[in-house]
Length: 332
Image (cartoon, rainbow, N blue to C red; front, side, top):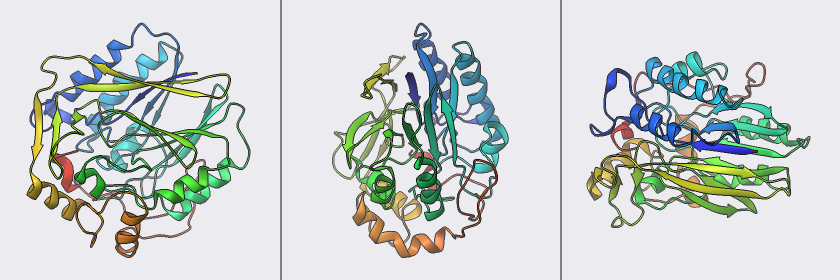
């Protein structure tokens, strides 16, 4: 199977520009056009931050671009929540279940099981997989799929390259990796970082697709967040010998390389204070250390219960998403 992995489209209603600079709808259409000639794609994965403002119209723009493009190839589309997405608009247009809790799901495409986990924490930029979601993942993986499984989650379970993204990382990533270890999971697909990354964690390939909206500068000075104009996507091939191959593809467009975002140290720290784990030090880093720093505050910010969601959407009940996007909206 060949997969087109997209992430961080950051669409907005009303023709507004992302960071007052990028027409993300135009960027998405350009990316799709770049892959028009590839008739081997059987699955499109959109791994979060699909909308920048959470509006119904932004999700309609995404659906109206992706669904016909995929249908022309007899391909399926899978959507995951990101920290900018709002569950009400997401569920209303793209489906996924009851928006009062995490929008988790599992489908099988050509023998490959695709498990989607909602790592968004309403009103925040960091990510979290709740105990009930881990239970859903473990239960789903108890029975191997014909051609293995993929896990899709917006926040990657591997460390970030910049201080800002370290402060907006997935908490307790080792719990997600432990739930996948020893199962038929062939790879974890994620976004959030706005640059391509392929690595292995706990023996599992982790593939982070670059952003459609812009490209993060991983060589910016420490503590500074810099992003440039430019879009990328990832082609993932699941081979018959059970190997996984990921190819990052830059999609050229006008003005590539121009600065579209520059945040100094103070701005980065402000965003981490507003959108990161409550009480955690700015730039604490991804992984177990970041998770430990925010464990107590996380429980307060994200109420838990074991009430299951209906049908194939399972998670823990929590406070519904608020009216606006996370305070980090101007950045990521």
